[in-house]
Length: 462
Image (cartoon, rainbow, N blue to C red; front, side, top):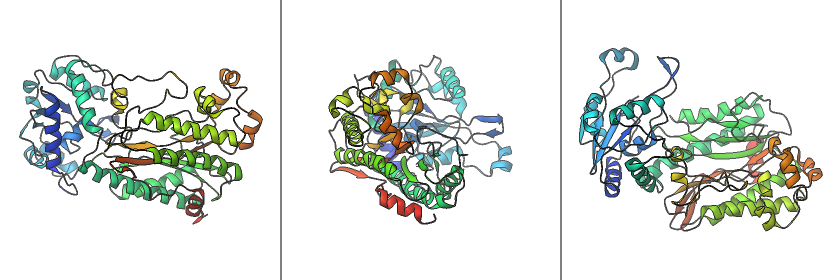
């Protein structure tokens, strides 16, 4: 890793973040970066990704490092690379150099961390090896990050309050991720006509991201089986009449993410039924974005999408009944089962390692309703938040063929009419929306959503 090249470390911003944390808590904090995980033998590892909580305050994706925060000051704990590693990895910056880059007040070898760990709070990492190290150094068991206790809970709540709204430095990174993601989607659309299988489109999209020295923020979803919400297979052939759903987002070298989905016809032209469903999803997408503003309940935005989806499906003859009643009984969720979106930041589902502590206002819990149980965000929107808006329509066999669902909704779903839309497996349209004082800004707004514009982008090489 070439730490000193290409990074604007914005040490003033990092300092401000540490000061804000110090104003919320009065105990020391230790945050670990984590370590790479062996793939099948020790020297061959999966790509390293530093803990987002570490990145937020340290600013660099350092491996096998920790920071100690107290009263706004930062101490870095990191071992210098052994001389023998130079052959394989080249010259690496020394601990003192790195400490200066991130504005650390002091720097020590990792062996000295335990002596500075008394009464410190932390957040447990997903990596089991690092969790064990955390527990040993802190000399206490750690609760999972989704259910912390004591000072770990206080720390978690403080970090959530800071990371919910993005500062100027993070927005620079998030805009870069969004711009590259838009470029990647356009490349995917243009490559569709010459691709034989889904992997060809995936390659075109990810090559744009890689060429910008970024990585993908999550495993790319590029599939003709849009009803499989998180499909990670790319072997299916692209056939005339198929819709291709691509959910692909870039992540900057500093860890900031984008998350965008578009759905387009492989042939370059939507069929009548595909266009009808697409326009229903787009209507929900547009209306939800228009509603975003500080002070608005995110759950209300989700319910707006549910009503628009239900109304559209009634108009198409798929559902029957009063729209409000259909939403109340969750009939829309047969086709739109997930939530309208989530937080975006250093993680594509930002702070989801903390479970609903980040996504839900204090005192709120997950609904048991079929149409609300998958809502990832249930907060009042505030300026500086970045959220996704991603309504969708899916024909999931496990849901539609479920005997209980068939019985419960037999009077409200026109199954024979639904068969006319067999060429629509899944459609999702997703953008990244920044909440600001004026209302909103669509960071990914340069990527078209209207069907004719999508068709034009795909038809270039079809």
